[in-house]
Amino acid sequence: MTDKPTVLLIHGMWSRPRVWEAARAHLEARGHTVLAPALPGHDIAPGDPVPPELAGYGLADYVDALEAVARTVDGPLVVAGHSLGGLLAQLLAVRVQPAGLALLSPAPSADILAIGLEPLRTTWPLVSRWGFWHRTTLIPREAALYGIFNNVPAADAEREVAELIPDSGRVLGEILAGALHSGKPARVDYARLAMPALVMVGTADRITPAGVARATARRLGGPVRYRELDDVGHWLFHAAVLNQVLGELDGFLDTLRA
Image 1 (tube, helix red, strand yellow):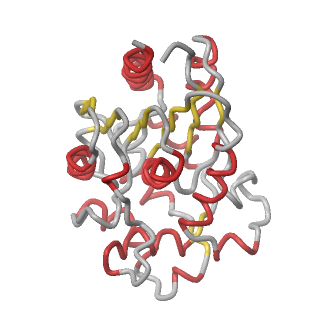
Image 2: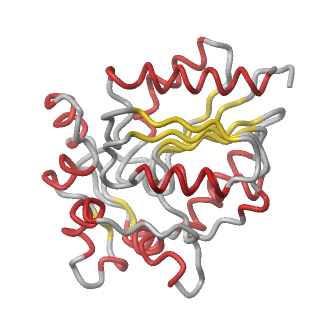
């Protein structure tokens, strides 16, 4: 690969493209074209009215929207996603066959059993409410601080909690149901993921634990660059961790060009 690839960045659940601002600036300074779209229904700010259609969006709707963006790219493409974005990146890569795939703290596909006390404690305030899959969800502050922003400096964590927005309960339900879901919308055709990949996770991740990332890396069919960040939680965007993440991403992109 001679040209620097375009990098498509996919944000996670209850999140927005703003989380990629520093990464986007870094990659653009290195000569990459960067796309960081908002998932359907996510082009809002905290406190804004919630789009009524958001509750009905499923994983396939998110991937359809991302595919429309990916198809506009002329030249090599690398797809990168964090959390839910890591699962969406896999589903998208099956369709568009990018030159590379970067999965940061990826959510589990339907092929991966992800049962644990920490993910359950994090999501329990949402999943304990019957019918959550028909509504929008917004993770409460205490659950977010425990499971998403653990090991993040307190001031940074509180600032990020204030930036969270509602997301689709249907999408959360599709991920949690996994292989038990009748349509299996979270199932990834790993036989079609033979491109080089970077998989990265913190060892202290409480919502998408390192075991999910390890299982994901084992299923990918191409060469995998796997990294675990010691004592790092789910949130990879605060200053103490971001430089490590960007360094790994830079190295991965350089290997693709080589």
